[in-house]
Image (cartoon, rainbow, N blue to C red):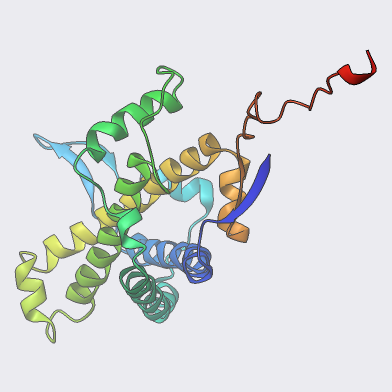
Length: 239
């Protein structure tokens, strides 16, 4: 028998979906800022193996250098990104939802088993609650990454006013590298997240939209003795 139950609270769904366009604009505007001074590359012994980003990338996408536009969008939407993140974290703490998100003692071991299950290498899946072990690690990691983006962003946005934050990250240059690395991390998280959604199936995606999940409840077995129909015995007085 199919039953419908609530899985994701409204506020968690709103902050989840609102964060997607905000983060998209943040990454796009951040790239506009970086493309004005694309100095990062993988270089060894004076030879550059890869540049972020190579010249063919600019030629293919016809990317202009729009530093002022990128900074305007980035510094505006960083407030929405920060406030949305604070609201999400506060709600998970107050409502107790953090218990389903924080990795447990065996989460890293079970996450590997979940990956093998998703790749159809392993048949059984480890026991899970609202989220499996891989989801717990991924969702907690993205919160830590968001905090890291805000702090490193402040370090390179106002290096004089927040000089102590810049100093904690080893200076302006290192803080900028970490900020850029976190942006790359978001891209990897997005790919992994989409993969997890596809493997989890339509029912899981629907629950993130509506907050409701359809589950199968096993039917209760009837007691053969209790539910046995009454058998009438013949009236012996008439014999």
